[in-house]
Length: 400
Ligand SMILES: *Cc1c(COP(=O)(O)O)cnc(C)c1O
Image (cartoon, rainbow, N blue to C red; front, side, top):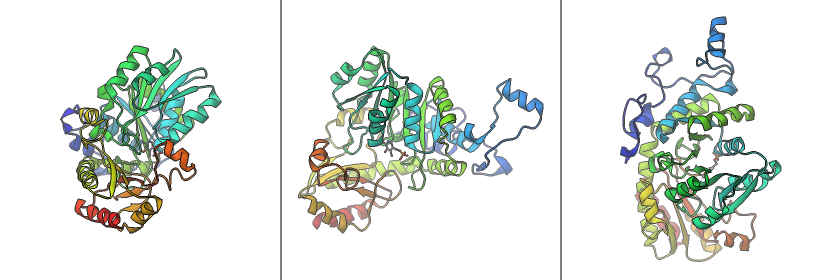
């Protein structure tokens, strides 16, 4: 699985699982500690005037002030860049902070952007509503129609933003097609690859310019922190880092430590989640009380071919619709004993959400149905519990 990833000379190993543990950190650490120390400081000192000048005039690496960078965060950035196969990375206090700062660093008033309609709800809201304040025009295009996407691109288009797989239907964006469109029109490509992680999908290898990650999910993996990252070429990342220093949505050093710790086990966790999700998807698919299952590595998925071509695994999320109505859906939820009811994904605990009752509670039924959010739709984000226990729990729910 990890064979496509390029080795990094600093990471002490070729495979993704080895690099997830060692990449980015020095072999010898402060006080010979095995784990990465948390450098809990807001400011850094200069040894003398020469040290100042080495930093200001010669550009030698030094951390000056917490908002401009921190050694623990730097290690997280190096490790994430290594795993994604990117030149550089900036970490943020949340995935949304990464997304909004990245977008703002790329646009000027008078610019235009293209974004697909099933992108993350808050990303869409930001592009549709807030960018208007800066006179940045946004065209929302239907996912999967590459003709419409190409026709939406104008002279002043800066980038095409998409996500893959998407939420909640796990649609797969064809990275080869989008790269061709972008090249024909000389626009940048941004992709939110949170649902995939660098184990399952490596967009940089497909020529995407910037990859966005909500590290809150699989990369940190324990449902205990919020963090985000943007990855790509040095020159683009430098611009984003610079704006980040003004926006100030910094991640704190302790949080970075938890991210680094989570990353050490990310490959084993996601491999397990891939396996569990496929088994659960097959179980649901054959269950008489289930109407439809959406999982990219299930043959019935509309983009199964693209998914298996550009991804190494289907990911840990399974979306499904049960037979019945809103009351059936509530009875199913209430019968679950192992799966927690809650938003988010990617952690070790299995979480289930009912989008109609949670994320789209403020929409009318008609609006929800137009978006495909039906009354009996569920998104199951698998953790790393035993798959038989999870299947038993879901089976009990379905019998209700
Ligand atoms: C969670 C998520 C985000 C936002 O990340 P936060 O860390 O919650 O700010 C963005 N995109 C996708 C696909 C997500 O799942």
